[in-house]
Image (cartoon, rainbow, N blue to C red):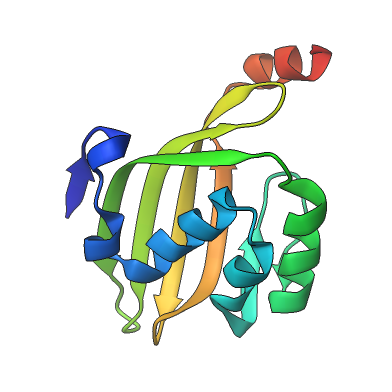
Length: 134
């Protein structure tokens, strides 16, 4: 199921409460709450990083790297997987102190916990190089 609406009217809590709590915690800089949403062996697959495993490592990473970021989900697609998990793909934007970039988050949930969250930047290499120049 795909839902695309204005960010102010996107009711992600109805579609996937865990993912909604991820964005609420992220935007409130409550990285401890975000990390607690992950399964004990949960993975955060962040751009340009090795996999970050476990809630304590995820908390430490977010606390160091996500400060002052704001995520705006704009489109959500949920799909059950063959393994009995649920995949939730969210497209939107992340605003940092220096720039705004389009992002796709792919969440895999098992038993109402995040098994993984993969974050992909939706920008060309040229756009990323220009961002780096500031």
